[in-house]
Image (cartoon, rainbow, N blue to C red; front, side, top):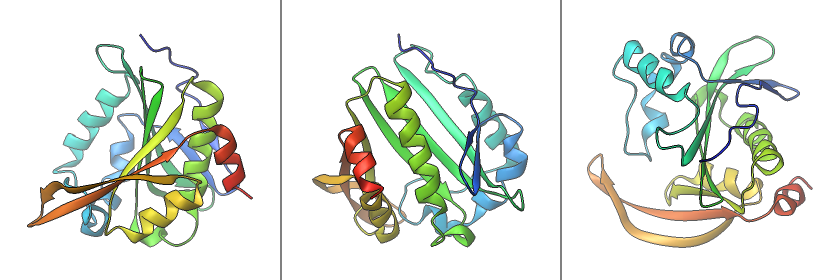
Length: 190
């Protein structure tokens, strides 16, 4: 069983506040997560209702899987000023000493460095508080913004999977990205 480390900690950067996901965040995030552009390269779509999103967030409030072999770390990301919500960052820590990173941000926030800033804070937490050997991210090969984000964060492309998924009428090829050490993460900061 994996141990949670300060799972309710709020993370703060110079421009952002990352709040651990709770039921009530569905009110704040539902509308921004309705933008279809967010889901262009992932098989899921927008939440079907605010209530469905709230139920999902209520499940994630547990912060760990029922079996205890995964830690679920999820944050609602908002701007410091004005305090508008702009997305979510997710990290799943597995008993294999690997963590998976994922994120969804409102298109209005793209290209401003918010995702980089939020993900760096989450990576800092993962390497500091959890015994992990690597952080992994799977991304559609067509998602250039996400590929650039991962490379800015110090991730390296490790593998390619052709026809990894089929959704929205087309096949999706995927890259697996890996950040192996805290030092790689620190070096990516420059």
